[in-house]
Length: 111
Image 1: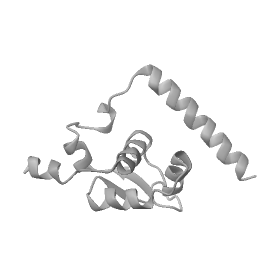
Image 2: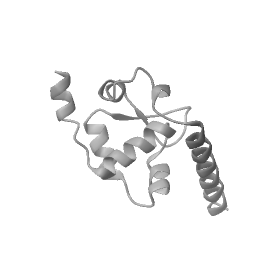
Image 3: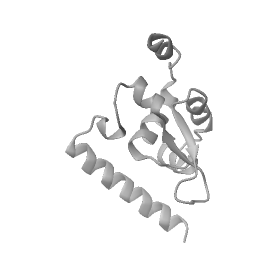
Image 4: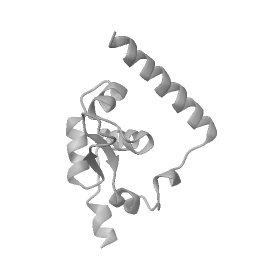
């Protein structure tokens, strides 16, 4: 059954990019993903939801739905929780700086 499940999980490059963005930065809105990728990602998001790897939920009473990974995502990638995703301290620092800069730019655009 797991082999059948994995064979159904073939994803496009765009879907893999979106999945990794969600996995490492969840919860995220669709507009957050679009801001990060600088391209509309609705097709990739719909594919990920249809395959059960991602779900849209209301998180902390925010207006827009937030995208998060599912238990199926954990099973397919062989990890028990999201904290088990591979990372390094250096990558963490670089990602924190990138997303901090991105949030600051987003705030400036809303002024």
